[in-house]
Length: 257
Image (cartoon, rainbow, N blue to C red):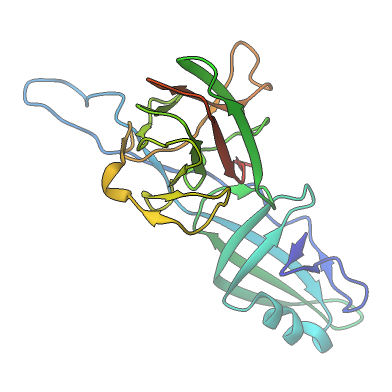
């Protein structure tokens, strides 16, 4: 386990990362219960949202490097799991406890909140599919286990009447793109841009021409699988009226562990 790039099992500082640590988050859903007069219970099927999660990282350290350890965590930063996935964190508590050992040792427990709830891949991946039919599917992020709400979806022209739909029912209607144009929708902000070069930044803001929605009111790419839950990925369907270009998705996968 790394915190801000520094290993918590660290012979240089005399640190030992303890098995008492909790690195698999407990996921809690917030759900709005719709109650109707004369109807028992609540209306089912209203989408929930996952709360921020809290991890507990416990490190044993000698008094000489305890201050270094606490300073390393700071107020916020990035944790890297042994599997290479990362999570941005904010420190919510630091609890030191002196141990009854022959040599002075302190056990320091760090409670760190993960605002984004899930572990993420360390780097972006890009997926592409030619728009060679009125409706095509694009599979993203093999092994996906949590929603991705900050991907970037891009249509390379020519393409008109483009709508991108996730397996969850989330959708985004993209502005038309002429040949030599790229239309880019940024899921995290809901902004949309048109460029005349193959780039993932900048461009003319055309957010007023885009529309999106879904069960949770945002466009997101969610895990889906057939009969085998180990064979998961995000799957989007792209429908077009006229076409000749391609669709691309870029972003980091999300994971519950």
